[in-house]
Each structure stands twice: as C-alpha cells, then as structure tokens.
Length: 188
Image 1 (cartoon, rainbow, N blue to C red):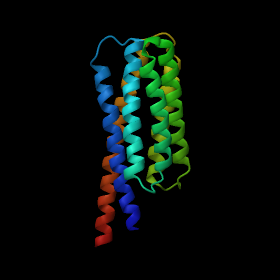
Image 2: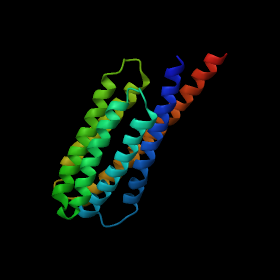
Image 3: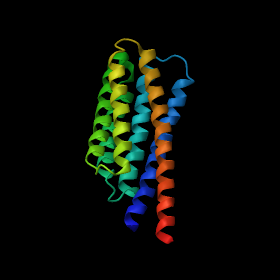
C-alpha cells in the first residue's frame, strides 16, 4: 500500500512538470504575431526537445517502477527526434511543419491511449491517459485539415499546448489530493 501512495506523488510531479513544459510555449505562441511555418517549426522543436529532456529525466529519476515509465521513455524519444528535425530543418516551412506536428501528435497520443488502456479499469490514471491521448490524436486530426495555413497550424499547436497543460495541472492537483486523502486514511 505504501508504494502505491508514493507512486501517486511521483505521477503528480510528472504531470505538473509536463504541464509547465506545455503551457510556456502555448502562451508564447498565443502572444506572438507572425505564425509562419518556420516559427511553428522552431516552437515545435524547442517544445519537443524540452519535453524530451523533462520526460526522459522523469522516467529515469522519478518514476522508478511506475506504469508511466515506459511510455514516458517512448514519448521522450519521439519528442527528441521530431524536435531535433523541426529545429534542424526549420527553413522548410509549412510542409515539414504539418508532417512533424501530425506524426509527433499521433505517436504521442496513441502511446498515451495504449498505456491507459493497459491499466486496470478502476485505475484513475487510465482515464487521464486515455483522455490526454485522445486530445492529442484529435489535435493531429485537426491539423491534417489545415493543409497550407501556417497561422492555423501554429495556433492550434498553441491552443492544444495550453489545454493539455491545464488538464495536466488539474491531474496533478487531483493526484496530490487523492494521495493526501489516502495518507490520512492510512494514518487514522
């Protein structure tokens, strides 16, 4: 029982870390004019590289034997590859931006959905991961409809980052509250 309580704390810290990594570029995109393909690639690249470092670090140092560890490593690798490509090839514009965003979002979202579906039905993380993954896959599908509009693609990326960041903050607070209630119940 004690290990499960500690795991909840670890996931709350991981969710909050991911939230911060997503909210910052979301706000930056929102308040920056000139959403060109190159700007979008730089924003995606920086977000991907920072997310890769944070998620890889969380998987390595914080999550231990937590069920999220494997897909955090996978997501860190996907973010690293897509982020490096986006930054390295940022002059390629909207074509590469569309490809990079869609591939990144589909891989990230699908891994989160699969990780959630592998958990027991009563596990709170199952609902969170399936919801987060679904939002990310929907983001990829919306971006597919924006074939030549860099303003829309970059705007959708910023909006998704803010929505996902807020969702992760709520998830972190929820897990912290649940952990606190479990600790109070165990100690009484």
